[in-house]
Structures are given as structure tokens and as C-alpha cells.
Amino acid sequence: MSLVHDLFYGFGIAMQPWNLLACFLGVFIGTLVGVLPGIGPVGAMSLLLPITFGISPVTGIIMLAGIYYGSMYGGSTTSILVNIPGEAASVVTCLDGHQMALKGRAGPALGIAAFGSFIAGTLGLIGLMFLANILARVAVIFGPAEYFALMWLGLSLVTYLTQGSVLKGLTMAGLGLFLSLIGQDVITGKVRFAFGLMGLVDGVGLVPLVMGMFGVSEVLLNLENLYEKREVMKTRLRELLPNREDWKRSAAPIGRGTLIGFFLGILPGGGSVISSFVSYATEKKLSKHPEEFGKGAIEGVAGPESANNAASSSGFIPLFSLGIPANVIMALLLGALMIHGLRPGPLLITENPEVFWGTVASMYMGNVMLLVLNLPLIGLWVQILKVPYRTLFPLILLFCFIGAYSISANTFDLYIMLVFGILGYAFRKMGYEPAPLVLAFILGPMLEQNLRQALILSEGSMAVFVTRPLTAAPLLVSLILLLSTILPSLRRKRKEVITEED
Image 1 (tube, rainbow, N blue to C red):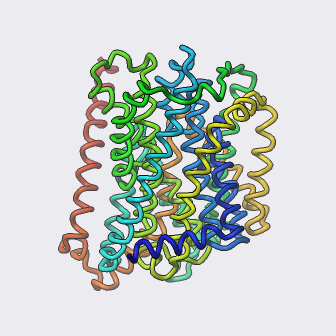
Image 2: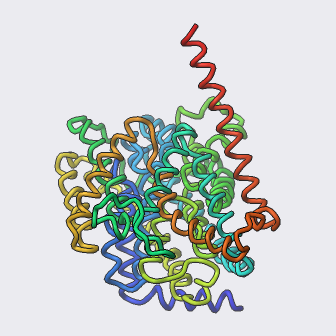
Image 3: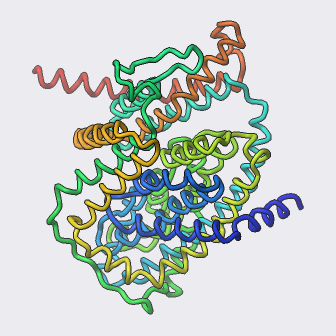
């Protein structure tokens, strides 16, 4: 009965006018972000993060969370109609969704994506309610050494599961850890790596860095295709409902996608992108007609769309119960919680139940809002897709400048944002993903703090990291993962060098 009582308590908070408005704005903006190619939830959350500083923590988190899972819904629209993923997790949807649109079946593709997302998102929330509390109770026994080991594992998994080169992912993570060390040492008070710049005494700001790496760099990348014309498929509302055969073929993929997305979403580094790829591969493997995949199989839409939405719900489990972000978006939410003075981790649910249960309840309402928004407003999203990017990019840059400046009214933050915007653009052109850098940057201070606390408690003995099972196991898994990826990469590189010499 306690769970039911807590859920009703959460609905009481979520139904408050300001929180209800924040939920609607979040899912609406999230859907819009998912529809518009090139912005993404990370960029949108970075732009709107400063707005949440002036409102209550629960209202701010409700809005930011709505942007995240709302973008998972909206990303399928551009994938199906334009063959351009509005969000990274919707890349897989392009393969069969757009082929269905070319065959005149854009309606059923959009419909099954919306219904599958709703079902998976709702089931993911049920799992979130049950597991987060259990995990939080277990996490109370964790000390600094255990937290350090878990965070290190999370960082290792992110670089291990990076889409590009593993070595490039590790490089970006290392750069992120270095950037997190800039500024005053929290224990000694000494200034580190500021290079004589007063603006770096307090460290590099999270918002300028993220806005630069994702917002400004996205604008620079999209400017390369400024005058590229896009063909937008047409569809009508009455054609959106899938028929009985569509449901028959999609029911099992939606169920499997929900399970895959939920469990991969909990793992650090898993998230929506990996979940959608694994779901697609699973459906193709299990299908009696694998040759249809890539040519318009509705299973190729239903499974991945369900997986990425289930992952967006389960990603909140390690964030709320352990204080460990499973992906870069959860890292931004972690940063927002810390800025509001909250302590993410096992005590968050007991010390600030209004934040946890209010957010969970708002996600139930947000899923219903998204189902209502995504079907009737598809015509509106199609019209927005026709807006030239040369009209959109000045507005995006304007929001970036306002967001970076509004935090501390410091012009130095604008320079930081521009520097990281140019660096982010260069990194992406060279195949370096910014996500490991941002995640390492946010985890860096906590990694250092827990490491130093663990060494203080053990009087400098490193044995504390190998003598306890809860500490040794994550570190051993991290070592195995890193070695299993680095060694094959080094061998391939050595063979390439030998071949070139010959």
C-alpha cells in the first residue's frame, strides 16, 4: 500500500498548476526537438537548463525530463517522413520507417511508433517505481570506495559502447576528466590548471561547455548543408491507425523492445541509442522474413521505438537511486539536481520524495500528453520541417548566448561556450564523440571526491579498492571491458602500419 500511497502523493504534486504546465511544456518542446533534425534533447536541455534555476527543483526536473522522453517520441516523425533522424536514437527507425512512407504507409508507421512508445514508456515507469526504491535501500550500505568503483564502471561502459573508435572515446573521456579538475581544489583550496585566467578559478561551467559542444557545434555542422532541400512525405490523420495485421506483427516486437530498452537503459552507457540498435538486430534475427527488413518491415519500427522509450524511463533508476547518470542526458539532469542543492543518490527519495514521486507521476501524464500530441499534430510538425535552417540557426545561437550569460552574467562564459563550440565541431568532423567528454566532466568531481574520501578513511591504503567485493567487482569488469576493446584496436592499428610499410 505504501507504493500506491506514494504514487498518489506524486500525482498530487504533479497536478499542481505550475508542475502540470512544466510537464506540458517539456513534452511539447521535446517533441519539437525530436522533430527538428540537428538539435537533439541534449542541446535543448542545455539551452533550457538556466530557466530552471529560478523555479522549484521539482518543476524544473519535470520539465527537463519531459524534454528527454518527449524527444524520443518526436524523433520518429522525421525518420519516417524525411529519412532524417531528429534524434540519435531514431537512426534505426529510418531504415524501415521511411521505406514504409515511400510505399504510402507513412500513417501506420507513425501510428505504431506513437502507440509503441506509449506502451513502452508506461511499462518502463512501472519498473522505475519498483526498482528505484529497492536499489536505493541497497545503496545505503555503499561507501566512498563503492561509489568510486561504480562511477568508474559507468565511465568505462560509456567509452566501451561509444559508436566510433574506442580509443577516441577514451581520449574524450580523459579530456573531460581533465576539464573537471580546472578550478579550486575542494579540499586544499589551491587553484589548478587555471593558466592565470580569473574566469577559470571557479572551474569550467557545465552549461557553457554543453551549449558549446552540442548547441553551437550542431549549428556549425548544419550550416554545411544550409541550402539542401528535403523531401517531406505527406500523410493524413485518418491514415494513422495501424490495421489488425500491423498490430499482429508489432505486438511481440513492442514487448521485446520494452524489455530490451528497460534493462539496457539501466546500464551506464546503454541508453536509448544502444537499445534501439539491439532491438532492431533482435527483431531481424527472430523474424521469419528477415529479407523484409530495410524494405519496410513494421517490426523494424515497432521494436526500436519501444526500446528507446523504455530506456528513457529506466535511465532514471540509477540517477535517482545511486546518483549515477546512465548517459549524457541523465548527467545533465544530475547537474540540474546538484545546482538546485539536492543530493542525488539513495537519500534523495527519502529526503526529497516530492522530486522523485512528482517526476514519476508527471511522466505518466506526460506519456498521455505525448500520445495526444503526436497523432493530431503531425501535420504541424511536417510544416515546421519545411522552415529553412537558415531561419532557425540564428535563433538557436541566440538562445545559446542568453543561456550561457544568464547563469552568472559573466562574458567569460560566452568565450568558453564559443571555444567549446568550435572544439565540438572539430571533434565531430574528426570522428570524436562529445558525449564521453561531457559525462566524464560531470562525473569527474564526484570521482575525485569519493577517491580521496576512500583513501582518507583507509589511511592511504589502496587495498580498500580490491578487498571489498562491491568495490573490486566493478573495477575488475571495467578493466576487462577496457582491455577487450583496446587490445583488438591496437592489433588492428599495428597491422595497418605494417601493411603501409610493406
